[in-house]
Length: 249
Image 1 (spheres, helix red, strand yellow):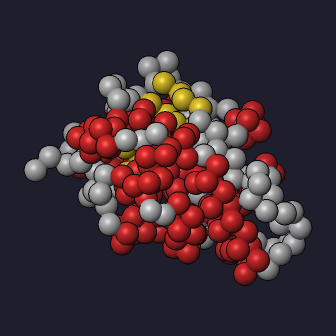
Image 2 (tube, one colour; image 1 turned 30 degrees about the horizontal axis):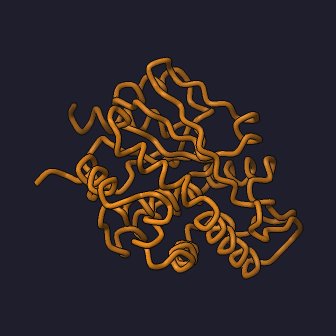
Image 3 (tube, one colour; image 1 turned 90 degrees about the vertical axis):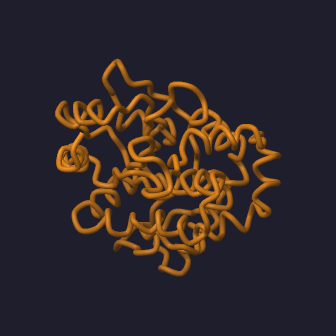
């Protein structure tokens, strides 16, 4: 496939899922792994583009309420796997109007909660991606920022990416979710109470891909090798993941 053809397919998908993009571009072999916000809005043309880029597996990190409100209906050839991660449960994220500083603190709490409460689920996702016939695959949630961002960051860490590269991949969301795309995610999250979004004006901190959020998650589970081991991701699984995902030299 030529680069213009690949770009056209990505554009067809992004018309409906603006935060759809390769995960770890330059760190992972091209065409194997993508990350995205919700895929319920894809039309037939966009799903055809997903088929053209070879997607086999969709890993849905959303909760039941989100799935019910925005069901994803991929073509029969694609496998849809639901592994719900619930950012608000036990994270101390309350409803009501809050300022940016309080919002940032609560998002940091949510990131800590996600990695502490769902370590085995995250390890299960990485096991799935290391297995046969899963790739190419897409990780997605509602915005493609928080749950998808955490799983993506931990996957990149598992295959040996350094902190700067992990943060760079995470930060791309700030460019992808701007303008109308940003407002759309805010509206969806408010309606679904994904993060118990505050009432009133848009709180910038709630939609930012702030490196401090990732740092909160990584600090909560340090050291990383011990986190992977107690979550059930052993060295052999990490080796398989690296073999599947790393570019061939």
